[in-house]
Length: 336
Image (cartoon, rainbow, N blue to C red):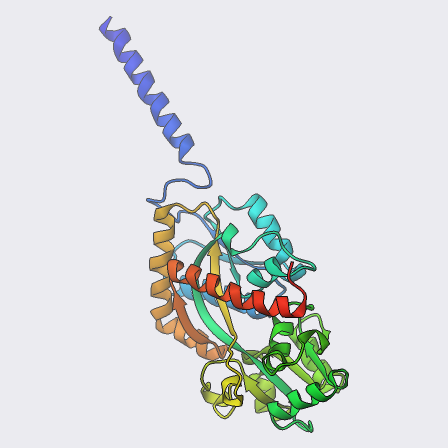
């Protein structure tokens, strides 16, 4: 009888251990040993763009500083300005803590605009941290007749069809909003502003330099090399105060009496179903990343400005910027 009881107890222990092992092998297992396997960070774009550079800088520094000891890889998944990737991510990977992605204002814009929109936005995933901030800029060719933002906006006021603005993304997207922002804040109906969309910032700048556009609206960090080469003039930036370095002499929109700004933040996101322990891990790790010397070097190399927000602060910031994006899309008649 004793021997039988011991066998039953042993069998029960084996069964209990088996069940425990099974329950901890799922995607969203307990986080005491998290992360315990390779991590994938997705850039929802092709190689070379802002998302791609952010993802690669992030994984590079996390690995080099040994803040993450597991292997980290970057995947590129272009399509629809991030809408294709986000749809797949929410459907397939929203319980996988080993799959993260980077994004920026398009995660708001694509969810709010009417045409080509995404049914998903930042509320369907977990904002982990804002890492950097960039700003919009309005630029013209070096030999343009427009020497100031005021002269460009006045030309648009006089005859909107006579001025062509270009951007590296679709109507209703980030470059479009940056392009029309000065005119909109100057009392011009943004729907009348002539905007040409190109497939990426490189093509938009080529159009500008090829005299197929009068001005371009895009992120200021992508314009540094053209400014230093003397190929363009930057008329204004959308920051709250003047930037430093090569951009120190460029006025802000506020200096032209336009009480507005537009921050192009870049951040990292995770799945909706992260556990509290996993979220705490990323809060601690990404905070340490933002303070590291290696990360400061990456910022400088890419003309990025550091602006770290933890998960809670980042979510609050997104709620605020969502209102600004909604206002512009509504003025353009592009809200859903």
